[in-house]
Length: 362
Image (cartoon, rainbow, N blue to C red):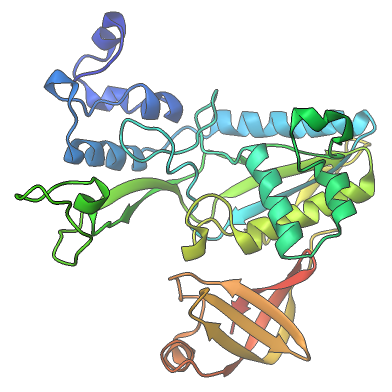
């Protein structure tokens, strides 16, 4: 087992891979303690796959993630005591979550991990961008509202006198406990083409069907993992807007990578989000929307954007299914997906921002 570490550290671990896998900080293991190197510091694809597979099976200690979560809530409490208006909530991942897949990594596929604690998280900068995207795409927000909430879009220092700071601040999305990891796979068919390889005559290899697929595994956050989000502002109205747009982005646009094929979507937790009020008492957030049953709603399927649409009394609710069609009951699938006909079903929907989202099909 070769490790690119100081001699004292290598001696501590020896050749015991199991001892190395007991490291509680995933960031250290993922970025520093990679043990898939061979002689000459070369690395084979099968070694990297084995390393990723080993990581996905680890049950990391949840205690320190809970401590960071508690600290984040204490920060929110401190802001409240200082006169800030906060809007905090929890959402649960509805599909696998890919964070930082294209980041630099010695094992080819990356993952965004907290720089100190090593667990997967959603950086605040990305959440702010997601909330803005939803405000523009999903809500047609007014330009003045976008300016007040997010600040000036133009960051050119030459026009600094005209720039404006946003009035809403976004916090990192942190897991409420150490999230479960799952191994996923992508299967590029044109590896030789992407790597710009040449054939025996020195010509570039085209992207053809006779090329062999090259499966590549990567780590994801499993569905069913709960994350804590918070926005705050001196203006309560802007804080509420920021929360609505962020919730809409997380549940309808998706966070992280590969959202167009169904990754990265969140759902509102079944248990109401709890928040701490200014009197240090825990109360249920009244702003958590309640689901509504639509009886005999019409369901249609759009294979282009992988979206399921329910309509009832001139109202519309949508859900991006991607390739996961298990939410639709078996008796409806053939007519809906294969024949692409409208079907009738009882549908539970819930409001997300200014839109409606399908929760369950009965």
